[in-house]
Image 1 (spheres, rainbow, N blue to C red):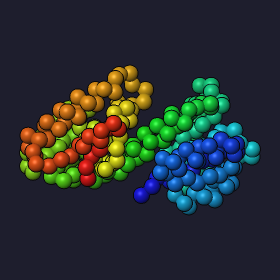
Image 2: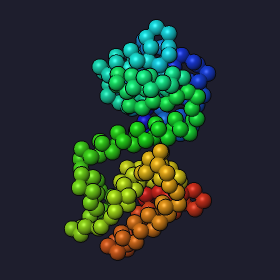
Image 3: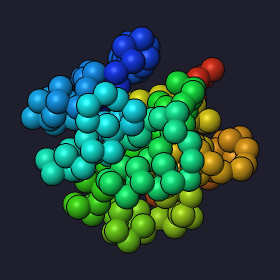
Image 4: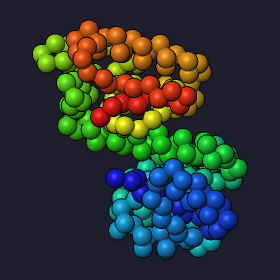
Length: 226
């Protein structure tokens, strides 16, 4: 199912630009140009809301407080207001993140993806265990089992496996995997993904040599074969 994103901003050119880019990524996009219009669309149950602060009538802070009475999805503030006070206020009224204008579409999409991923992981953790072919992944204990045998993985290896299992048959570059597992603010080299995947494959193959899990898509990246 496609994730549903609501864009709330009175600058129509910016909204159109963001909407087109997010739809290209496969998201379903709702659009509102003022607070009242956004509130009317809340029954659509967006998975994430991108919210501008400086709008006529009800500003983003007030709207966020209204939204929080109805939905609990992530709210990502975007604003030209860039003081520490503005950022703190945005988080205090119920926002989950804050991006200063102007921002790059790459940063916006990465943060949206990270928040949606976190929501999906929280939903999966409610069930504690995920099944992937012959493996059982226990997200509360950070353990992976083949039949009744525990496969020893490091924390990062487990995070990569969990990320893949939550997105079966989707192809990701090593840069995308690094950003989602290590975080967009981490300092490091995404080529470490190659070594981590090599180790994950080797550990699984010791227990289940006849089954394919992580597939290399040459020239692009990797995917978990669901």
